[in-house]
Each structure stands twice: as C-alpha cells, then as structure tokens.
Image 1 (cartoon, rainbow, N blue to C red):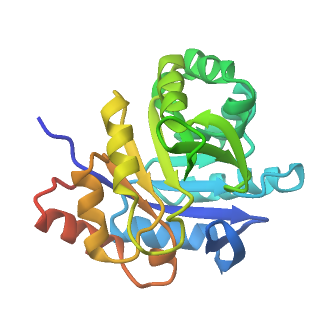
Image 2: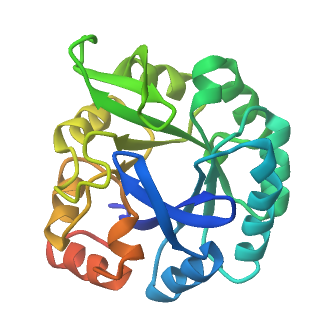
Image 3: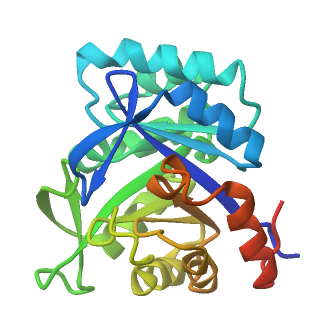
Length: 253
C-alpha cells in the first residue's frame, strides 16, 4: 500500500517572527508564525515545521510560547527544531504542543543524544535535520554543514544519515543549502541518494520555486516536500501544490 505524500510549510523563526533568506543569508521578516501556521493549516498542510534559526537562550522561551499558541489553533503535527540539545529540551517542547523534534548541531556534536531521545520518546519523535552542501571533500560528494550552511563539518552526509538512522532517528529532513531559497528546484540527486540508504521517511527541502518542482522530488524518492518562501510570499498555496502532486499521480491526503 502506498503512503500519501505530505506537503509541509516550514517557518524559520527568529525572536518570535518568521524570517526568510537565500542560502540562509540576508534574513528578512516574513510574518507572524502563529498566523502563518493557521493559514497553512486552513490551506490543507499535512504538517508544520518550525525551525528556531537563532536558537539562543534569549529566544528559547519565545519559541515555547509560539509552539504552545500554535498547537492550540492548528490540529496537524508540529515539528520543532533549533537549539535542541538534550532529552529534557525535547520533553519541554513536547509538553508545549510539539509532536516531533528536529535535531541537527547537537546530534553532530554528540551523536548519542539521538539514541537518548529515541529511547525515551520513540523514534517517531526524532527528525534528523541535515543541512547538506555539495563538496569534493567527501566520498559521496555531499557534506554536512552547521550554522545555516556556513560551517562545513568533515561528515559525509550519506554516512551521517546512515549512522543517525541506526541510532534511532525516525525521519530525515534533507535540506540542500545550495538550493535553499534559490527557487530553482530541489536537489534531485541528493534526494535520490538519501532514499537509497534510508529505511525511514525522507523530507525534501531547499529550492522549491514553482509547481513543477514538487512532483520530481517525490519521484526521486521523497516522502514529503517542504517549502517556505513560495508559501510565505503567496506565490503558491498548499492546495495548489497538492493538486499538482495529485495530477502527477502521487497519492495525497
């Protein structure tokens, strides 16, 4: 039985506001996260992803408030990432109304945290967020980055994804830094490579700019497609993306 593909608006949040840039740079204000989440819920979004892109101690309480207020109005799964370092952080976010938690830098710094979260809350709660760049420094040609793509690690993106799944990650959020904000389409080669190795769902992120970009990402192996600026700017609606996917033969919810 085929599983319906998901359409997921992503809200990058800084200091309680949604922001958007290109290749993670030159961030600008894109609106109120709670209002945008409600709009996308009404448009038929399958999930909402919040990423706290500054994730400083100053903004952490703001993020809990945003999650709590959103969960009271939006009745679809909420994934929250950014600044999550321990299973206690996860517990507090889940108590605030989050359904899944994204981890990135903390897992790179201490991979054991993946297993700690999975053991305590279940693999379905933990989403490994991968910010990936093309690179000649790794065997696969893809390297993991941190700090919004500005800092390259020595980790081969495919090797790291495999390890994270073995440790208990229940989903991969694969974001192409090269494609992010460019609206030139998803990195299909990256999606396909992740699909080949992954026994868990793969979310494609980075590069969505037109209706015709979404179906190829699903064909390449993504279980879900995530986008930000095309929704925030009103260029596309969730319903339009779902209709385009349905027209391509994909099963949607």
